[in-house]
Length: 150
Image 1: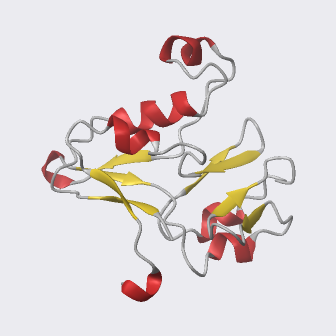
Image 2: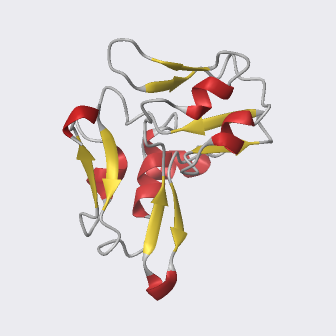
């Protein structure tokens, strides 16, 4: 199952991944257009600073036994049977934030003003996730290994 992984030694915490993610998930699909939208598009990745000025991009790790899916009382979070990815259906989300509380990676983000959560969808339909393509140090990459391969 694919997931975005990070080489934290290379991450500069520049937040280019956050910007690219927000633009990718905007209606406009351009930076200027995304900045003009109201409400602003929400990135599905957030960069947290670590000591020594390194960054740690917090994102969905597409857990095999996803606690967010198990905790979702409305069924808004489901695993896609074909791709194995955890998908979020905003129409079903009731804004209870249980998924946010149980995610061990900080990969589910609450948007209280919209009463919904957002999480990484690996830019489904795109060849490369926007965060990976935008990373100037190539700290982010897509790991395609199956769980059995480790």
